[in-house]
Every structure is written in structure tokens, then in C-alpha cells.
Image 1 (cartoon, rainbow, N blue to C red):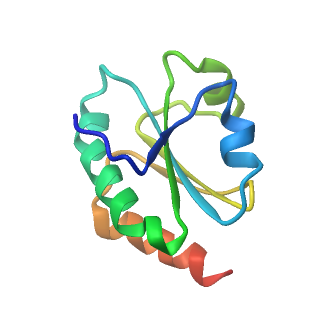
Image 2 (image 1 turned 60 degrees about the vertical axis):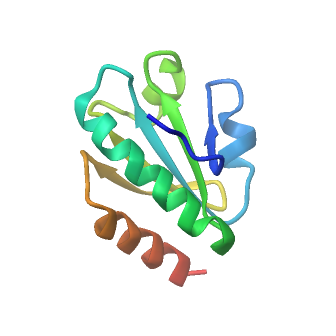
Length: 114
């Protein structure tokens, strides 16, 4: 799956620095290589990263298989799970493969609150 240059890979070791210490809105895709629905939502996440980069949205992906501490910390039981962070605070969660308009609606909802 082709990754966008605008998607940051986050891990247990850099999650705090990349997401919790950053300002603005961040969207983190919790996924795994073997997950079919994750492969469906992956290109959508990349498209959103490209289209929203200039509007200040940070988009990241975290592989739950290799970063179990962070996945556990946020109670990830189902993947894909997309978590939204505003100024480093977890503010919203979307579970399952969702369509692009739904995810963009969540982004607009949280950006409008800035």
C-alpha cells in the first residue's frame, strides 16, 4: 500500500513526542498488516493526509502488532481504530473502516472547535 509522505509512522517510543506533545489536530490510524479492513482504510488515510496537510492536520499510523503498549494504553480492541488528538489530548475515536466523508466530517468538527 502506497504511503503518503504526509503520514508519520508513530511507535511506542515516539508517540508522546509526535502526538501528545504536538499542537493542533492529529489523526492516528491504529492498524495491522494482516487486517483486511485496515488495508481498505489505509489509502483513505493517505488521501486525507495529503489533502489536509496544509490545513494543519497531522496524520499518523501506528502498527498495533509492534507497538502494543500504546495500543493497550488507549484500549484498542478493534482495528482499524482512528483516534483524534487535539493539542495532545485524545478527543475522539472512530472504530472500523469508515468512508472518507465520515472521517473528514470528524476532522471538520474538531478543527471548527479551535
